[in-house]
Image (cartoon, rainbow, N blue to C red; front, side, top):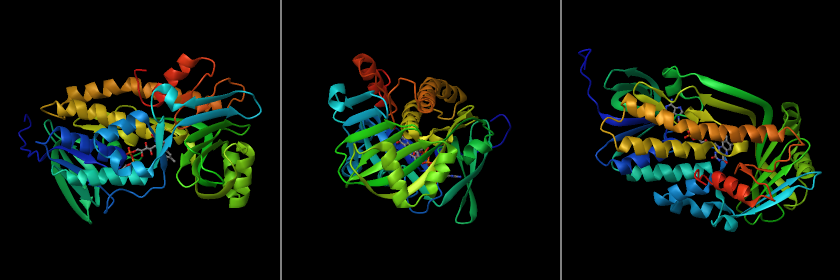
Length: 396
Ligand SMILES: Cc1cc2nc3c(=O)[nH]c(=O)nc-3n(C[C@H](O)[C@H](O)[C@H](O)COP(=O)(O)OP(=O)(O)OC[C@H]3O[C@@H](n4cnc5c(N)ncnc54)[C@H](O)[C@@H]3O)c2cc1C
């Protein structure tokens, strides 16, 4: 080393954050490089966080999870999306998409994020070359030419370890990103999405619905036991008022906006609201560190692409790292950063069109929420192209 300091590299890779993207990345790296020891720092003491999110997984994400043996552990808790119904309240426009027409059994799967995170965590525990440090918070890093020293807190004591590369998979408020002084671009769409779980009078039976209304789109995704995941996009003022409604009044308002195509809405739970914003890091990399998943980009759930995009971060980063001698080399990290930009821009364009389409009742687009699907009913090739993109297949 040119500054004369001696540094012991304990780990080729340290990952801060054992959420969905961090745990998946650990698994891909551990399987690809059995000669490496990989440390995961995760603040939760016992496995991953128990959040209440329900996420739609693109078909390509499910295929990857199947390939690494994780899907088999959660498949029975997931609901397949076999058909999508998109309609426009007050207009005749309507389209239906069927997975079978696009050569797949399901266009995606809906699952509780906590169940998937637990399966990924348990798979990590099976790998002898992953060291899962529960209750550990990344605090700061010291960068040297050939190594990075990672300072973290565990059970109120300060600790450190040294690595060739630090991966920040520590979510939207990433400490790795702040520590590396990586700035963020923000876009505020001045809309709010209300997310909730509804109980219905009938099973959705594999159908996902997107309905355009005067106040914004309402989307329903199928869940087991006659339940559905609701995403309802409204202006901030309307969202504020709607959130204050009693459960009965909320159900009535929602039913009025959506109609009865999916039956009666009989109960609601886990109501939360999210501002419709987009956050994108100015860069994914800094000397001997890289940020992935929500640490790099946070999309509004209306696009339903956040985790799917993070999965592609994990795949592309691990493919490059596995083949490398020095996983923290700047050349390699730059290549990764460069490589991801096209995908980010594609997803941002998609999110932008969704949001701007939502706020304009007269735009003749039909849009599938959560699968971010554009389908022009009378143009099957375009519909097929969008369906393939939505399913996570980029080379449609
Ligand atoms: C309501 C909602 C619905 C969504 N729906 C979809 C969908 O349908 N489809 C889809 O693809 N995506 C969806 N998303 C997005 C998806 O949930 C995220 O993209 C995904 O969770 C990102 O995973 P992550 O691992 O990057 O971040 P997170 O899940 O936020 O995980 C970050 C991890 O880092 C840990 N951490 C935090 N601070 C530190 C620290 N200092 N040191 C170490 N670790 C730390 C946390 O404990 C956590 O485990 C949705 C999101 C929301 C909010």
